[in-house]
Image (cartoon, rainbow, N blue to C red; front, side):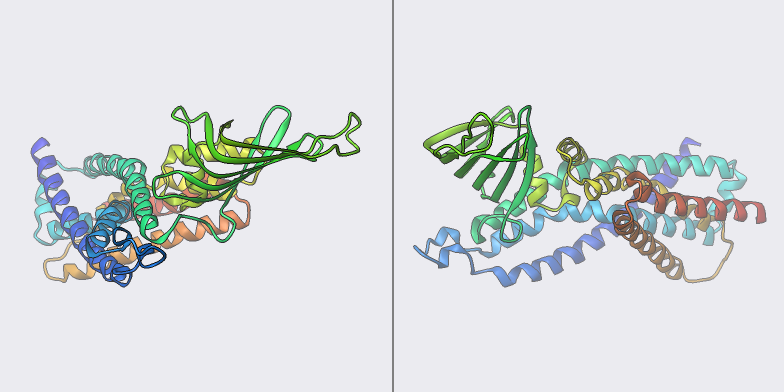
Length: 379
């Protein structure tokens, strides 16, 4: 069985690697063509005309290379499906799989064999999606912001809430600079009765090393004290400071989630942000669904190998394998379309987040197992 395992694993890994390289080549080409429109532009053509702030071809190549891990994360499940279908169909066409069955490769053993390989792809997808892709994608965004301006969301930036013992803060971060620091920060502090207590404005800010505070720069703070009955305002107190340490539980990853795409963030970062939203009585449905999609997405590789196994039990000596590969592509596309549709529908209808994220995988796994069982009984 170890010999059979090495044979099948080597064939599948080679096919999946070839498919992923082909897809990456196409994506790299199209991404580079899209980036060429920005070459020769940038902040260096404005104001002081600094040549170091002009976006050049090496910068475009670096940007395209940095988003490759995101493409690998997105393409791995469908590449696993296409590669595994190709190997299974080719073995069925050449009767290799029939020989393997007569050598002791029963249906349960074959399923267990492919599930073991699928688990390896699950681990790889998780590692790329949770560690490599978020880091590279953030570096790509910061690289782009260095030449075209800060990362921001709309005209108002990102809004976050911070609930403390005797007050609540509404925090607005205008943008992220290319070095990861924040720009144009506003902190509105309210008491337990909902009255505005203070307004703090900072031109820029950095995250403390232990992530338990922000270091604000060029701070202007207006305080609105009230009398003992909380009815009448006292004279406004205005303070200015070069630096101010603001204790907060809002971490750098939470600001990044607000300013960057949530699907590009790591699972742990999304989980912490969901916990932060729930602790501050904010709606977290969208981010909960994204979190569970991040959890279940690597498992889709397992679904893909199970979907591919029934193709090994199709008996034919002549035929076009490309037709089966095309069918696999259509199955994979339909899976990802259903995955996205269920995410949107779940968000609109307030479905249980983990159920909305897991339902497409459960449906396709059930269908593939039914097809596999039918073919085994038929053959």
